[in-house]
Length: 109
Image (cartoon, rainbow, N blue to C red; front, top):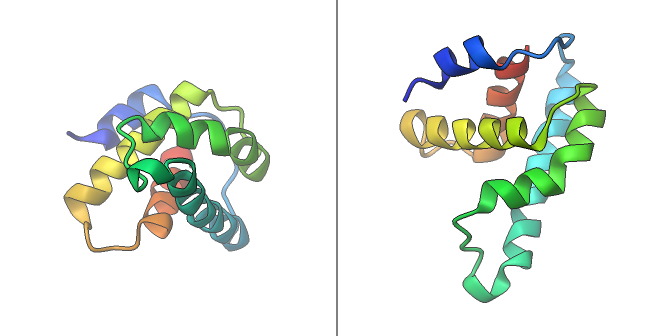
């Protein structure tokens, strides 16, 4: 699935360019979110088919503050799923938090 086409035609909020510090902060947020999700789903060893919903709930307010953007949870879920699919397809061995950060910045920029 080509998410570049979907994102470029359906989801482009107006945002400023992001600093390297902001990109690093976003990566750190993703690094924090993974273990928090795993802890929340400890009984299933972190397995959760609906993980994008949980992640969106966990990071929604912080993403809006960090990136100074208005984004709905639905849009955030869309980006999380897009980042996951592209990560699995293009760079499955790459560390996911920086990959997701780059995906988000490119999608929002």
